[in-house]
Image (cartoon, rainbow over all chains, first blue to last red):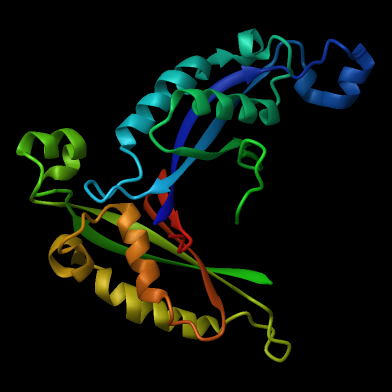
Length: 140
Length: 136
């Protein structure tokens, strides 16, 4: 019996959307207010979905404590209350929430192996969210 | 094909305990959930069905009928119950959210006459939920 378990986490970070390969005018045209040189911040909500068979001994896909520990150590401590532009993960890419979704998925794919990482869903604000499943199609 | 989701809530108590584990193992694996006096949650259930829109009614499913099925098959059995002690599925199985989603799927399977059951989603907390699609 394959089930999907989703856990939601919160973190806050700042960023500035700016591409060195574009002119000042192009950056302004592309990113608008998000191009403000001093940056701005968001309260991000991260949903991590893992899947797998239910262990008959525990009734669990994976122990929630292990998932929480991995997300805390590998994602929240890395990005919470940080300026994303100063992080090495964004040295060469713009810290859009699209890119942040991919970065977080790839970090968790490496660090959490107790269940299959299905997807991450990242809310930048209450009005927009992004999902990444390692390139796979999302299921409804 | 249109997907329709109906939401409902129920409240229940449970605890996690495997009699094959030692007291220490139960405590280590299940933590606070292993308290044998139990604890409770307000669960939110989302049931998604799918089907073609009936050209006469404009419905995928009659919502009144779906609501009655959910009340009869799920809520009457689970709402304000102790899952370990009062729900037969959990006499031998630990009532985790994973097993609860599977149990609700099995209670609903075959009960819908027009639409097809697509997904059962059970929220134990606003930040924790399980999806089951009937996959083996």
